[in-house]
Length: 345
Image (cartoon, rainbow, N blue to C red; front, side, top):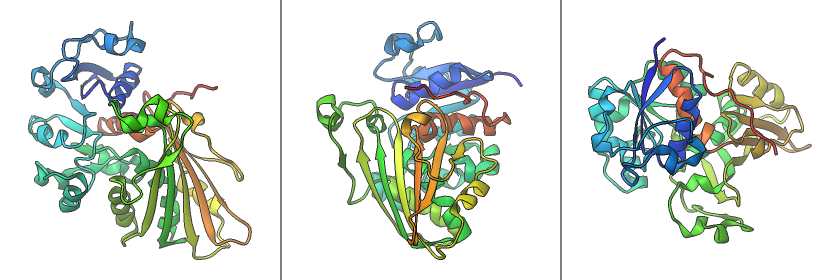
């Protein structure tokens, strides 16, 4: 096929530059418009020197960008931005992938309650496809508007999904204890993510309610066909990239073969790796890659399933998954441009 003309709105955030990095190695993508309000007029490789020699583009202001000439536009913007601009692009025949939360919840009232603003285009929400390929692959292929999942939801939903689909666990006894690197907070100045605050430190946040909670509940509930009761506690890790989610669920039958359940569920998934029994997946093993690595276990004599799920929050949790969705939307092999090996150490 010909080259896919790509625009990225919000190209100076961590997810934005990760999209740029991935698409530079994509054989069918051509970056044609990169926008930034704060850095308009600056060369991309001036802002991100790792791109020097790979890209000869300048950031432009969103209003000056020729986004309508693109085949697909990624919104790597704060919550509340894409919902204002996406409708005009959709009307012009441009496909849209939103990496923020504007179209993730089908319940618009619930979205407004959690995000503290009225939705600018509630009539567009029903056509948005939740962009987790492992559950919505066929719908994504024909989608015009894709809501890219959040990073925590990606790790948690993929971790819980086989248990819920099989009916192996009680949906009212789910616990997600999840940790993220500081890049999950975005590329903005904040005291909690300053080096002197985050280094040599570890703490929980959002215990009384995190914005990813209704997203996880809605998606899992839709898959199950019934509400789920989830306790979700996020934590900040003193590192840059990575999410580690430790998930707990009460089993209806303690004799179930959890390893076989997960290996069967994800056997044909290119970006979910079910590890051997007794494994403990590490965040560094997925750094820079689009994999979700999962291990599942059950303590002897216990009726609780323990699932360990790790991703790179900027790749499978954001930009990589967005590119995976783009591949599906344009009829490409799903793994195109995403087959990289994580560096160690």
